[in-house]
Length: 479
Ligand SMILES: [Zn+2]
Image (spheres, helix red, strand yellow):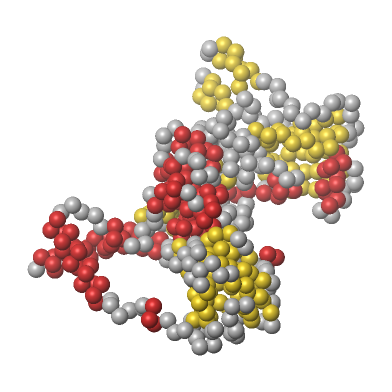
């Protein structure tokens, strides 16, 4: 009777928990398929070895092909449409390598298994890795193992959300996510540390939702004062990706909080020509549209034979700038162009006398907060010929979502990962989506524990005879 009551209670607990997690259930994956070599980085050969034995399987049939002893390298060659090897003779186009130990590929150490597929006599190499192992490695590359724990935890949640919502980006290649900056940087075991493992463990299963949907949490290095609305950088306006003044990011920590970059007229002309844009002699570069968050939305190059406008994220990529948040200082002939030019200080009269303010910025007046208007660009003057342009900018990255240096600054102030994410993402909620909620059931009631152990033993006994090593069918075509 007690047991029945306990099982009912357990079911109720599970039901309540599953009701909370059901919205995220369809996206949560215990393992991820990470593309290491594909497309332009596809390989003709691939060498693996492990500190433990490696079992090789045919992915098409599930049958075993070969067993490679610890420390023995196995070289695979993509030829004649199959995966050939110096360690076995077998006919298949896709193999899976598994080991209890870690596996080295290209002399880099990885956890999990590998899938190697011959596609046009080049290999696609995919690392099939436990989600938590993937995240623990990623944190060491996307941030640093020495960063404060709460910043690492915020990054862990961002990366988990991002990995589960990236959907379809690489599905034609047969994996979820690539290991480069295109998706998220992942480097295997070498970038793991105790700090990154702890950050992953302490946020295990946590996903972030906006309007009951798990959403991609974008991040970048540093914002230099303001984050940006999604539609001002990309296309659609997302309610949780709203730009804001960053009151936390500390310039003393942040790399590239302020930056300058100077181009001569000829350098810009060459950039335009290299992109097939011919507008003749460059006469001016004009900021046409600026967002409420100080980001440049539209930039136009005026030449004597035409003009070229670029918008949103192309503004940054076109000129290889650190961010879209900049003003332009223009230099005329005879004027000396310096690499680092300080903007003149701006003073306002306040209740406490004359004070210096940064521009663009805000000042407090008797009628409340007043924004110092952005200085309008003068119309193109045909008689003036600029010889160089200095971009005075703030921040590094696309500026949408979480600033990593901002997260660092907030963690240094003692704020936690939920504070960090709730600041950078608007109106979000946290969902606890731990993969195995039953094991997380914690109580100090001895009777309940006893019942629980009995229940678990029974369940285990029932599941005896399920998949074991004995079920593996070793192919007799292996050597
Ligand atoms: Zn990618």
